[in-house]
Image (cartoon, rainbow, N blue to C red; front, side, top):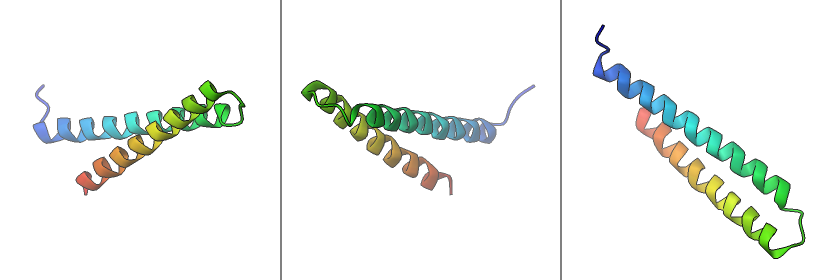
Length: 68
């Protein structure tokens, strides 16, 4: 059975959106767990997790906009 190319592209776009959502969720959870800590290293982890969440959200919006 041959799957049409358009269906593969649609499935790949859906997987990209799912991946960005998972990365965004884990980044926000990591940020929430480490933001209240007092150590410098933990605050740096929280900052980079928040930065990763923002970047993944931007890519999520771009992939959603390309769909429509």
